[in-house]
Amino acid sequence: MKAVVAGASGGIGQPLSLLLKACPLVDHLSLYDVVNTPGVTADLSHISSVAKIEGFLPADDGMKKALTGADMVVIPAGIPRKPGMTRDDLFKINAGIVKGLIEGIAEHCPDAYILVISNPVNSTVPIAAEVLTNAGKFNPKKLFGVTTLDVVRAETFVQSITGAKDPADTKIPVIGGHSGETIVPLFSQAKPEVKIPEDKLDELTKRVQFGGDEVVKAKDGAGSATLSMAYAGFRFAERVMQAAKGKSGIVEPTFVYLPGIEGGDAIAKETGCKYFSVPVELGKEGAVKANNPLGMANEYEKKLLQACYDGLKGNIEKGVEFVKNPP
Ligand code: NAD
Ligand code: LMR
Image (tube, rainbow, N blue to C red):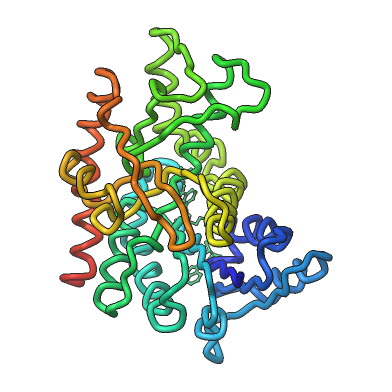
């Protein structure tokens, strides 16, 4: 398994690269960034784990060297929010960064699993799909928007109610997109079942939807979630790799192009959104089946879903347009 981190020198990229370097599923770790990869690579190379490590800058065909032969590319490249910004405010800069990296992937490692972390995920994943389509290389089963941090937050925040010793033992589908009201935690479908007092539900739901703002505010201009995102990004990447190596029964919420995945068409029809985060079964080919949790949503969640659809459609369209009719 050759894993690449694109944006490896950043706040997410460094701890994510550390976790991948320490992961026995990774044989070869390749770090790519526009700055500082020699230092990050030298530092991580002293860790006595199995993964061989290399680092590249854009000079001397660095992107090509970093990507060639990759089985999985994780992309946390791009600017983070500052207080007062929405994720959509990042579009102007990050859309071009993601487009450039996906063009490189289409050319040098089109069969890799692609995990997009760069915000706004609701738009950067459609950008990636459009770029890959134009290159004749789009495989919807292998393109994932990473929304695992929303799941991790839901597990963590609900623990004060469940009292579970290990928060990760409570499975909560968090669906929709990855920003504010497009994030929809389905606490009614938690496993094992969770009874949330009515007066706590709104607060809990809002905390999951706006958990990113909490960190942006606390960091006070120094960026957004990096360490918890590295944890979440690694957790998702590890599950993709486990499934690639033949482990069955892995289901994770992730933002995918629904019409390209078994079971996805019905969800796209019901939501009016071609891209949506739903619990997806992972296999060797990537996303092999999209599970539909919509029918089991309760009345409270149905209202949340309506707001989600309304916001998400515009975000998706903006990403598609960026590639179809470049500004
Ligand atoms: P950061 O500024 O610390 O790091 C970004 C890195 O990307 C930098 O090292 C930069 O040099 C690099 N970069 C910029 N252009 C590049 C290019 N063309 N090719 C390769 N590398 C390039 O930012 P961060 O805190 O690590 O956040 C990165 C992105 O992840 C942001 O867009 C942020 O909003 C997003 N994010 C997403 C989630 C999520 O849940 N999906 C969570 C947290 C942050
Ligand atoms: C998050 O959810 O923490 C990330 O999307 C970063 C952000 O901008 O909030």
